[in-house]
Image 1 (cartoon, one colour):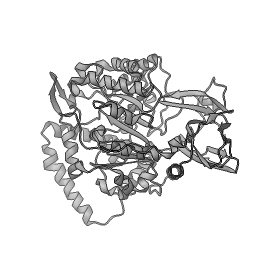
Image 2: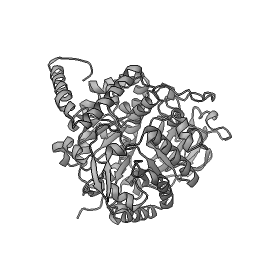
Image 3: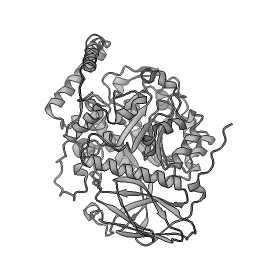
Image 4: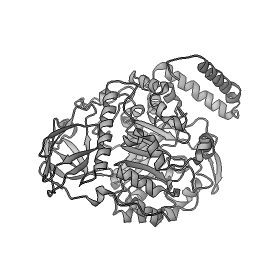
Length: 578
């Protein structure tokens, strides 16, 4: 029987910290509980004869590294550049210190929060004080790498000295749902993984990755498998927590036993639970007959962690399809009744060539017929937004990845949500390929978002998966085998993708990644350049023709030409795109 991991030093040496003057009351944004600070604020604590480390996460609204946090600990002043979004910081506190003074060089422009008379500087959460020097060093590395990464993005660099702040990982390659979920291309994925399907993911894996793991802030598990089947999950969760990582992990939730629930309590984990149904009958069509047990598991997990707003954060996932669209409102109500931290609306990956075809629980599930037209997906987003707002359910809409969906498709969205807020107050992390001019509202003050390309994923993330290395979570074909992640990060392909995005275009790799919501929105809104628009139309026709003819065009034309071009590339030295 595996021994329990020792309690880490940052937990055993933890001391309470008080929010003092300059901080406002606690607020929530989705699963996050935080406090705004003004332009100056104090954190106070009892003195100690030994040096310690003050750790927190800080969110800046500025995208251009122009906001800085001044930290005074009594023995000098340190200044930290703030990367947009939640970033960990760790500061050495000298022996005998009673307080840490914080200050920002610029405030969040008031135009973004009209009617609120507060002075808002930055958001602060997860404050802790401890003596764990190893954790302090790990978080310092993460921050320094993230600043370098953001600076390289702002400078338009295609080759990066930094490593990805977000790392996609592949924890486990087996699943407890057999046969697989009807929308899961299990056989295709396992064929792509080949011999790597059984490669174990261990602490040795993390050591081999070196700076790619050490410098990462967020880990996203993208296994085609169920992580709670892992025997060494406890050890890995302990390492992730000890080194200050946040983890996003997807599960079907069917084996959330009491022991597995105990593993998660208090850890900074975003747990995405795939449900896609509000009733047992629909769940049977997609998976199996375990829906009642799954709901019981979720209730026990949410009760054990103390309800909404406490880690691990429970996100219930719904993918709108023909077979479940009529349960969308029921799913919002289910999320409210379970007191989940968030409901996630995730589109079924668009595919012109999937051949998945199942008979399950008396229902004929054919993938190509389950895909909803784009305008129907937009209306589903509006319906979910309206009811979620009424019921107080936090909603994360992954169709809005990259932002601007409501602005670009206002008629369809407002048809389902006529009383909505008209978009988020804060601009998205990255603009669309071509900015929307749908409204006549006065422009808000610049906070750096205008300097971002349509997608920042190829700078911010790398996915090291058994099926291959991907530049983003929506990537199609792998750009390298799993073990070549190091060279893939600055490979000719990756640099070419970055250059195209910097030039205001999508690389052909992006256009071939049909699951990407940013490309899909740009295509549907007619924002693609004319040549790319016609290319996408031609591809859709080819893919459909290929599917309807048993993939003969692919076997007889496309694959032979692709192999010939690959041989030509290997025979011809080039410094361009690979």
